[in-house]
Length: 195
Image (cartoon, rainbow, N blue to C red):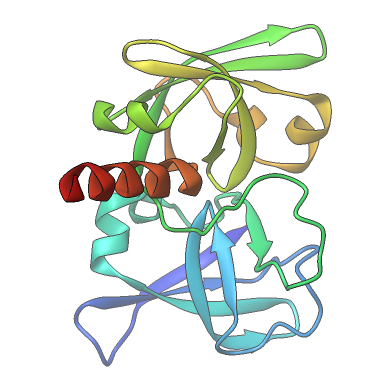
């Protein structure tokens, strides 16, 4: 949970964020470590017993939902994966590709269906049915892809341990497409150019 943020005093292009609720974040977090906040990879610059501080560029504030965060907002936090640990989802780098807007959130038994329209529809070319996508840093499986939106299902566990179940239509989210899709496109372009 974010509970305070303030501009850094020594750099015009950087703002300081502070979190005092790190929950289950890995013990031993220290300055220089990476941490994902709402899917955005940030570098820890200071650490306290129950929280951390991170610098955030104005660019990041402008192109992600972090720029609209209010003090006390609940956020998804995840420490960086260490080599040898279980992946448990897909590769999520914390490098946000764009934002989406929730257009529908419907109960489906114990789960929820969430429809997300991308602000930059060009990103839809990287999204495939049964492929992976990260929404606010949460690795999800894509159930459907339409002309201007995609649908994911939130199982009870995901609803319980992330902030996604609290989202309502109109809310904005950070979206990171599957890294493998980006690399595949680049390889195909380079292959075509060399033919």
